[in-house]
Amino acid sequence: MVSEHEIFDRAKDAADHVISKCRAVPEVALILGSGLGGLADGIEDGCLIPYGDIPNFPSVTAIGHAGEMVAGRLDEKAIVAMKGRFHYYEGYTLRSVTFPIRVFQLMGIKTLILTNAAGAINQDFEQGDLMAIVDHINLIGDNPLIGPNEEELGPRFPDMTEAYSRRLIALADDVAGEQSATLRHGTYVAVAGPSFETPAEIEFMRRSGADAVGMSTAPEVIVARHAGIEVLGISCITNVIGASPVVTADEVLEVAGRSATELEGLVKGVIGRLS
Image (cartoon, rainbow, N blue to C red):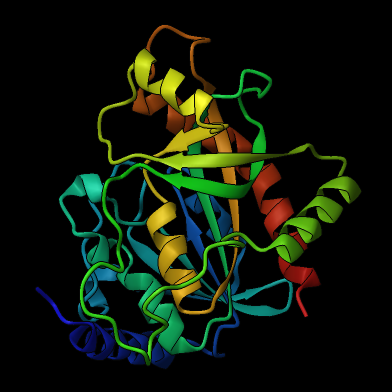
């Protein structure tokens, strides 16, 4: 088992490398999910950092994930964006999946915006909707904080009462209103994947209070809150489960791509309002 102290040292090496490539120390970090990496194209004065060049960083294998960081400015804020994330279903441990959060922590990041592609369990949602995540249910069956804890990184038992920042959700609501965009609110359930869910599993999730389901985000948020990082999560609803007989990865990526413009406007608006 990798000790938390080893993770600290490995994350520090990675953080130092990323900062050395940045023209300004980032204030905000973005993690862009399946088919949503295009948002990084709007970053000004950007510096491209392939994951393969970052010490100790895993390699991305998921479809629709570019596997590179972009550091630069978005609406006058210094940011760093991940075009693609790591998933449990790729065979990584959750400590590897969440390693980028430790890197952000040691870079001094205080605000994290995560996006993902998700299927709607709530039948009132529509394909292409954006949903602010107000809470999550972790059904992955694992937790990235299991194992030795290093107090320098965070407390042994972090509170998750406000995993998703109410302040940032309110900010996103204000921006969506100004842009005449619809921003749903909902609970996201994280599953291990890579298979999509059975009808019985979806019914179980619906009865549990879930509005959307995906294969990421919850582990990253757990580590971010352990690290004291404020979190905003936005899901792009790529399909309404039950509306079509078969769900495919191609459909997920195609709808995410169509929603990218609205998502970009929302995220840029939120970042522009951060103090």
